Image 1 (cartoon, helix red, strand yellow):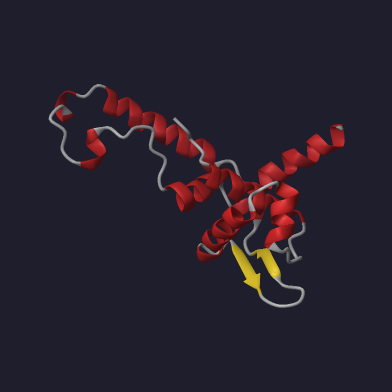
Image 2 (image 1 turned 90 degrees about the vertical axis):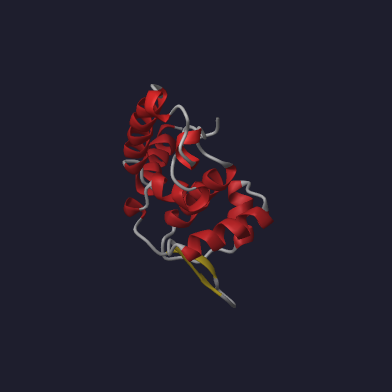
Length: 141
């Protein structure tokens, strides 16, 4: 089971790159090169971030992409929701339709409990938190 897909991982990395210089526009090529993200893949990701108003774009000379939201207000769960939907640890039948085992399912309650915990933890992690951690890590090197 993958909790974070490449889309989500790359989106987090792209947002982190944009947040390090909040007032500057970066080209998709610059971000792709610095973060080692495939360029065409990154273009799709940036479009998703624009659609959800986390990033803005500007065409022309000096254009590119820029963060449009406070990094401390962008949680990992928000990014997961954009690229993966809600966090789901199981594809069992109780999600899609009534399951014949629904009334006797001992796992359903536990899965829901764990999903709530995971959501809560990811809500507490923001791009701003990750940038602070990155800065601490750089100071140690």
